[in-house]
Amino acid sequence: MYYDNLTLLTDLYELTMMQGYFKNQNRNQTVIFDMFYRTNPLESGYAIAAGLEQLIEYINGLHFEAKDIEYLRSLHIFDEDFLDYLKDFHFSGNIYSIPEGTVIFPREPIVKVIAPIMEAQLVETAILNIINHQSLIATKTARVCYAARGDGIMEFGLRRAQGPDAGIYGARAAMIGGCIGTSNVLCGQMFDVPVKGTHAHSWIMSFPDEYTAFKAYADIYPSACILLVDTYDTLKSGVPNAIRVFTEMREAGIPLTFYGIRMDSGDLAYLSKKVRKMLDDAGFPDAVISASNDLDEFLIDSLKAQGATITSWGVGTNLITSKDWPAFGGVYKLAAIQGPDGKFIPKIKLSENTEKVTNPGNKKIYRIYEKDSGKIKADLICLEDEVFTEDKHILLFDPAEPWKKTTLQPGEFTLRELMVPVFVDGKCVYESPKVMEIRDYCARELDTLWEETRRLVNPHKVFVDLSPRLYDIKISLLDEMSK
Image 1 (cartoon, rainbow, N blue to C red):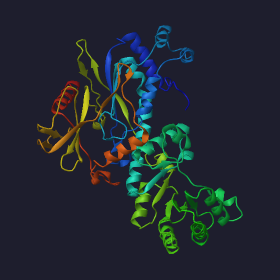
Image 2 (cartoon, helix red, strand yellow; image 1 turned 45 degrees about the vertical axis):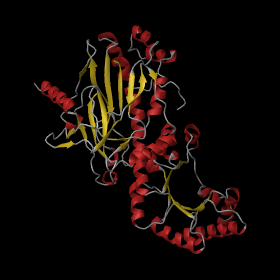
Image 3 (cartoon, rainbow, N blue to C red; image 1 turned 120 degrees about the horizontal axis):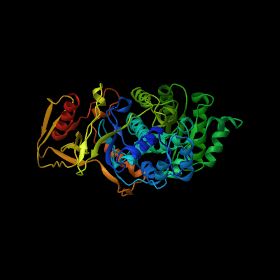
Image 4 (tube, rainbow, N blue to C red; image 1 turned 30 degrees about the horizontal axis):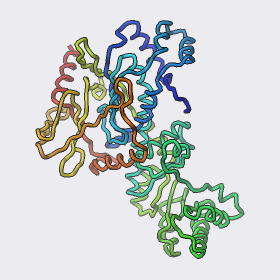
C-alpha cells in the first residue's frame, strides 16, 4: 500500500521468461502487447475504463532496488548476468491507453504496450491487476447509479473491501463510475474527492435515549443532520424523535440546509413510504430519506419500481467487492513482433474457444457515433496506419458473422479515436485529470450509450467490428496456422 516501487508486484513467470529472453533471443526486440477483455462484466452491455493513473505511477517507479535483486538471487533460479542486467532496468517503451472514464467494449485494446520484449513482458501482471480491479468497480458503480435514476449514491464499503488497497482504489473507481462521495477519508485525501457520512447505531446506544442522541448530533452538525432512525423502532421511535429534533431546530431559527433520516434495516419500500408521509405531515417535505443495507443495482431498481421514496443511497459491500461478479477478466496478449525491416509482424493466438482467438497486429480504435443522436453506433478496430474519415463511407461487418454488413454513408456518423499516448520512449506524456473531472467525463460517456445498452438485464450489444484489412490479416493467419 505504501510502496513507491512495485516492480516485484509480478508473477514469477514474468521474470523467468525475461531471463529466457535475455539468454535466447534479442532482448531488445520490440513487440506489441494488448490488454483487453473478452466479456462484459456483470452481464452488462458495456464497461468503464479505470486505473490509468495508478498504471502511470507504477511505470514511473519501475526499477529493481538492491534488496529486490538480493531477494531474486536467494531464489537460486536466476543467473548473475541476468541479475546484473536488472540493476539498470527501466521502461523505455511506448504505452497507449483509452482514457479513464471511457465506455469500453469487449476485444478492443484498453492498453497497448510497445516496448522491448523483456520490458513488455514484465509489466503484464501489474497492468492487469490495476486496470482489472478499478474497471470492475467503476462498471459496477455505473450500473448502481443508473438504477438510482438520478439519486445520489455514496460509497461506503471500506470495512468490507479486500484490504486497504482495494478499499482506497475501489473507492476511487466508484467515484469515477458516478458516486457523489465516499466514506473513505484516506481516499478523499489522496484523490481530492468528497467524503460523506453520518453516525452509527453505537452513537445512539451510547446515550441514555434516542432523542438525546439525535439532539446532541444536531447540535454539533446542524447543516449536515442525517439521523439514523432504526436503532430501536423506525416508525414508533426513530422518525418521531427525528421530527422532534427538526422541529426544535426550526423553532430555534437554525436553517435546515441538509437534513433527514437514514434507514439501515427493514422493508425499505414500505418504511420509506410511511416515513415520507410522517415527514411531510410534520412540515418537512424537503427532508432527505436515505437508505443502506446490502444494496445493489437490482435491489435499488426493485425498490424504485415499488414506489420507495428514498432519494439517497449508501452502497457498501456489494459495490466495493462487486460481489456478484468478482473479477473483470482482462487479459494481456502478444499482438505483433517487429521485424528486421522495422515493420510489425502480426501474431495471433488460436483457441478451441472462438472468443479466445486474438486480433493480431498494431491496432487503434475508432468510435463511431450516430450523427443525429450522438449515440454510439459501433467501435471499429483497425490497423495503426489506417485512416477513416467522416467524408467517406465506412463498411462495418461482424467479424464472427462477416455476412452481416452495414455501410455508413458520409453525413450519417462522426468519428473519434479512442487511444491516447501515455508513455513515449519511456517518458510519461499524459497528465491524468482529477478524479472528479474523470467522473464528469464518465457521465458524458455514459450518455452516449443507448438506453437499451444500459438496461440491467439482457442489454443490447454494441458491436466491435474489424476493418476489412485487419479482418483479412486475421483470416490469413488462421488459414496459415490451420495447415
